[in-house]
Amino acid sequence: QVQLVVSGGGWVQAGGSLRLSCTASGRTISDYIVTWFRQAPEKEQKFVAGVRRSGSVTHYADSVKGRFTISRDNAKNTVYLQMDSLKPEDTAVYYCAARASYEPLTTDAASYAYWGQGTQVTVSS
View 1 (cartoon, rainbow, N blue to C red):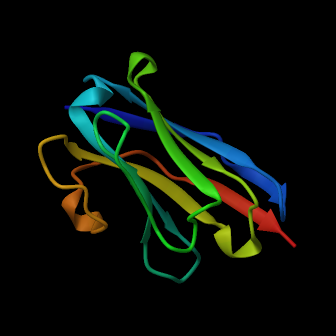
View 2 (cartoon, one colour; view 1 turned 180 degrees about the horizontal axis):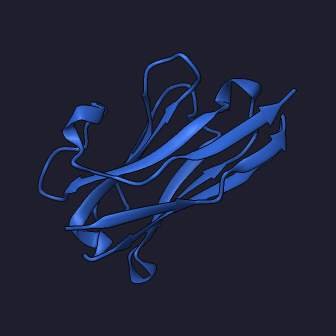
């Protein structure tokens, strides 16, 4: 069973950048599809980005396309979320999640069995 640890959140002004990391232990991350979700206060959890096993297939929510980049370094057992041109509406707790690589990459949080702890991202205007 894989364990996921999230790091890299923090505070940034609008227009700034942050990079989140999701590092696996217990299993190799290359065995998993990895996605990022976020949850703003009093709002439902939403899909942000996902990456398939090889890293060549990615999927983004429309709200972050062109600003966020998901990537993976299987040798480091880590998936990254590079967030550029941040906006106040990006403020949320961000989570990484994983499911087996042979399963579809979905935007449904209920489909993911493995979750990292959340990290707060705050973007001020």
